[in-house]
Length: 302
Image (cartoon, rainbow, N blue to C red; front, side, top):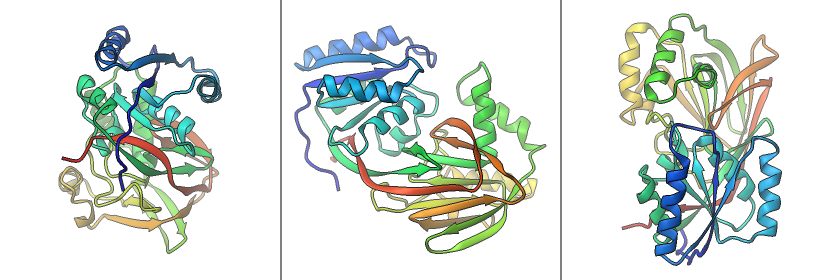
């Protein structure tokens, strides 16, 4: 359950200076103006791509804050969330990326100026996070088709939803599903899958609802399976994914659990995306829940 707001005066904004297409200088200027108008002190921390997690943790030990905002995309959010997990320091999000999946799931406005209202109008929600084969995950992890598309997207020079759709259409015709064996604390499933999502949330940044009716604070997560489907079924499945109808398809299933072990039959390594970062991990892939170990600023109810 959300807790009452506190007054946040010392604020750190973590930014990746080279990511995305947004002018970071103008965003920083806007943040400074709004904070000054509200009597807040804004500090800025730029990531470098080298040991960012340990460097950010060390900075926070030396420079106490009331909240830390991830001003960036999914990678920046993952970094800041990991730094703040298992602490009482809350995470705020100013969405500046292509997907912004976690911020959308939490109902955070996608407009920068509106998102900054979380500084003085917010509740604090304690949410679960995941560990996926040793990798901190605040939102979603994938094996299969979407992991392939995320990797191709990361390798390309073009950003935005259009580039993602173009890559997906190119890869769809030649994609070969793998066979998985999924063992959880409550059940076991084995079969071929087009994609498999380890989800502590509902929605991809593309607004596809992969895990309807889920909660981010219930101490459980879901393994969402899309089985191979004929091309004629694709339009219907796509419609269901955009209308909370995941469970209505004959080609989908969800397994609720506290831990999972995923084997890819016949493979020793697998492509995985974790909060938008493409990885290659040894199999089996294992995931566990960290119950309510992250405090997040969300819009105030009402």
